Length: 258
Image (tube, rainbow, N blue to C red; front, side):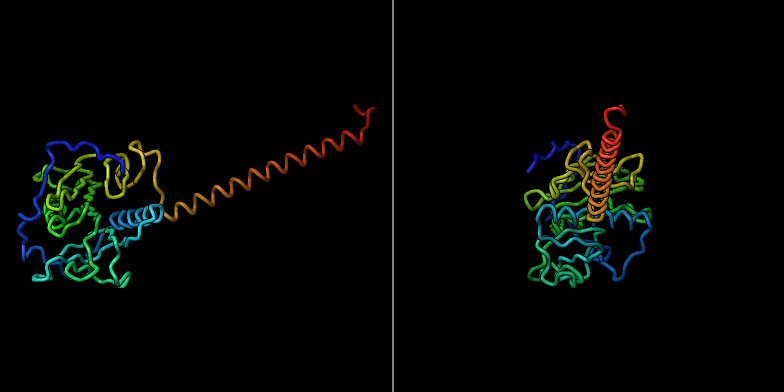
């Protein structure tokens, strides 16, 4: 494991056991909340990057979107619905799981959750979401705000926030601001380029030169490389045939044809 960057002193922390759930405001309603096209596209891109990361890392996980996460059996309507999540190990139901209920056997909190800030509910993503994820024991939370919708009342807006569970009780904001930002969960760097903030990327290096690809991008890259190899082989073959033709013509002319 690579070392985490040193955490600035001004960042926030939430003591999980001190959070008082809002029994009315934290109720998770049924149904899917409509999302804007950029929000949808970014969520899908992150999901597919994490799916490919899991394959490359040899991890047995479930990566998905918009799955209800509930943690209090006494108040089962309380919950949170991450835009993207990674659960390890996967729940026993696999892809048939309808919600994670942490009091059920085999259901564990995601070790990574992602929230993309929406224009209509920026306060929820800046203040309420970290408290919910702190209470339910999520290992790491990314709060991404590409268009800087976040409220100034929360010290924002910030393009990237990363929260991390420390010692099982302290949910700590370990990065706030522009990228790149280091993630312990995936051992990589997050990027939201200011010139194109919806062009989310993950990379192995802080500079972003060694960017990770989705499975589809990997397949396209392999196809392009195969085409380039075929074109190079064809060019070598054509050059060889041309050279043979030149030699044959030279032989046909004989010594006097020089």
